[in-house]
Image 1 (cartoon, rainbow, N blue to C red):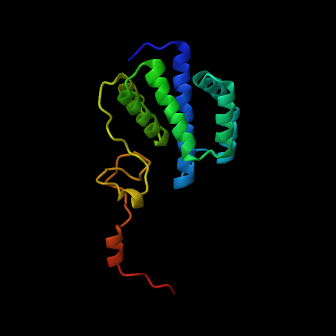
Image 2: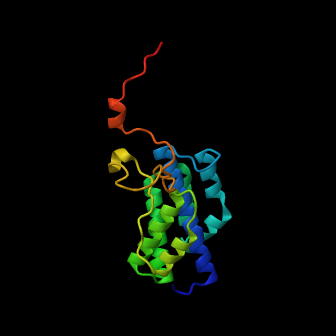
Amino acid sequence: MPSLGTQVAADVVTMEDLIARLIQLCASEEAGVSFYNVSDDVVMQAICRDPNYSDMLERVLESPRHARTLRYTLRKSPTDRGNVTSICKLYLTLLTGTVGLTPEHARKILEEVAQQALGTEANFARYAAVWAGAAPLQPAVVPSSPARVGGKRGRDVVGASSGKPRDARRARAPSSAEAAQRPRARRG
């Protein structure tokens, strides 16, 4: 892992936090999962007014004007995938250009940031391993619509976003095939 200056390290962490929050907002809209106890608009307004994010964007973009424009765009349409893509590209540029990581290593770190953002608990050991480049990225539970992806594909988890191991003692919902074979209850 390369040695980072204090400001660069702070910018990397702040950028990761911003990416995580934007991904959570997008997931909230697409999947109906709520990560916050306030509306998405309130979260986005807080993000756009946060001085830590503002300062970091000004340093990374090297222009207060570009930072203001990006914050305005985020505030105007917070769940636009293009905004998340722009922030992710900035993050990859920061990791490859300023920090000096290879593009593949930077991409793995970005994938880990996204997976951690959508999980229920942070896995610091896994995050540190990806940063160190010690182990290849193991697929984590990625929230997705079974209709888009074709189910869980053999993953042994409860729910697409929980990441918790399945407990064999817990009752499970019947599959659609099992439910179709069951006689229907009569309403009286």
